[in-house]
Amino acid sequence: MTEVIGTGPSSIGGAVRPRRLPEGAWLVALLLFVVGLFALLPFGRLILAAIAPGGTFDPGPMMAEISGRAAMRATWHSLETGVVSAIAATALGAWLAFALTLTDMRGKRTIAFCFILSMMIAPQVVALAYFTLAGPSSPLLNAVGLAPPPGSNNPLMSREGIMLVLALHHAPLAFVTLRAGLRSLPADLTEAALTAGAGPWRVMRSVVLPLLRPYLVASLALTFVAAVGNFGIPALLGVPVNYLTLPTLIYRRVVSFGPSIIADAAALSLLVALIAGAGVGLAAWWLRRAGRNGAGGSTRFARGRPVGVIWHLRHRRVAETLLWLVVAVTLVLPLTSLLAAALVPSYGVPLTWATATLDNFTEVLARQDVTVRAFRNSFLFAGSAAVLLAFVSVPLAYALDRQVGRFRGTLEGLAEIPYALPGIVLAIACILLFLRPLPLIGVSIYATPFIILFAYAARFLPVAMKAPAAAVGQLPVDLEEAAQICGAGFFRRLRAIVLPAVAPAAAAGGLLVFLFAFNELTVSALLWSSGTETIGVVLFSLEEAGFASPAAAIALTAVAAVAAIMALLDVLAPRLPPGILPWRE
Image 1: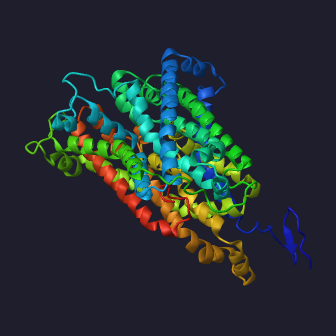
Image 2: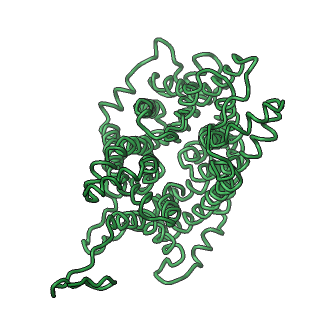
Image 3: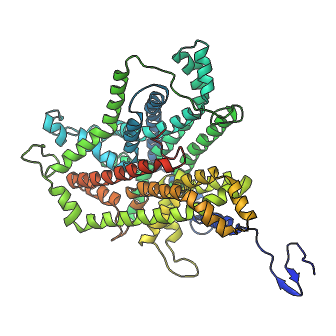
């Protein structure tokens, strides 16, 4: 009795049975299904709607839309705010990265935590905070007698104001990118230069900056992409003065309910995707170049201790004061302005002991049905996405690390499409994908909570997988091989070896997903319907209607939730792979 091994069925004793799949092949199938569902299918539908709006290939309407006057003006606004804010954000982020990595300053972790917390705050909250800080009706400035004259314009509601707020909001992104680049440089190079008599400035100029150049370019590209796709800040500061960027123009197109709304929104979304994709591609190319040229742990340099302190500051207190001033400008001052706006009966009333009240907090957290429902929805949507992605991230990370081989980079790149591209593009793609009933089941999830949950899962899948993928990569294969020799099957090995080691990282990935999704606006602004409002949507609606004080109360509550989650992640840090939490060494 022999078994024929081939591509067809095998025969044992005259009985025909199908050939068994390789062990764990279902994990690869699951990975391909998830990548196809969350990345390829939505954006394939978007491209199809843009180039074939009537079901046949016809790029004419798309070209007419993106070459129109409104689209060209919005494109220019997106490019100019993106370029200027990216340069400013990279300069500020680089300064902090150098200071917190290469000097002997104290309180590095606290400063990094506070600086990155400002990035975790939703863009619409950041815009509202600076808006309530700078205008003539600012409760905080009126309380100290520094408010501009009554009737004057808010200086932040302008092109320059949008650039400034975008730069301050995205500077932590540049900081994270450049600090990762600095930590990837081997300490042997800087120590050899210092031993040879080179001073700190000479080491920076001849060793650090040449190796860090790819990360500087990547930082510029990533902050540019973030600015181009940002909706909350241009919407709150630009729309009232008719300064439209591409995301805000798409939003106007969608809410206008015109006859060609779907085709127009798809065309503009594809334009945003092309601009953002070019930035992401540039960043990826430069980072790959960093690997080839020696940065990032390449084969040219042996892995060892990362670069450490090369500057021992003479005036350390002065430098620390400057860093804390940056934290004050990016975090403390805006939050103080929000608190002042939330404590007055209405925006424009000076904050005094006589006018201070908690009525706005009571109103939005207990009395107003829409705000109570928005908090409940945000917890439900963000929590559901976090739990779902935490569960699926373990088998997906295992398949990515152990079973796909040379295709890992391709699959990782495809999975990151919904996260790398602006959220407004993903929202339009989801509308196009789910506007009609789903095949086979004949049910549409459009205008239901499930479309928001799908969009959150698609957008934040790379966030959920980062920590588990790092944990699986650090797990020795020897343990699984020994268990296999002892007769443990595939599922037994996953349950007894992989899952206990990766579960803390998966939980941290889920918390990060909740952190990002809880205050999300860009996606939900186009996908919400009556009864599915989120915190970001309600806050944006209140501010747009002129109710800045209730909006400030909602914003502060959301910031408190974000800070609490970050603190919980910091507690879990000892059980996580290194590099997962960007505010820690």
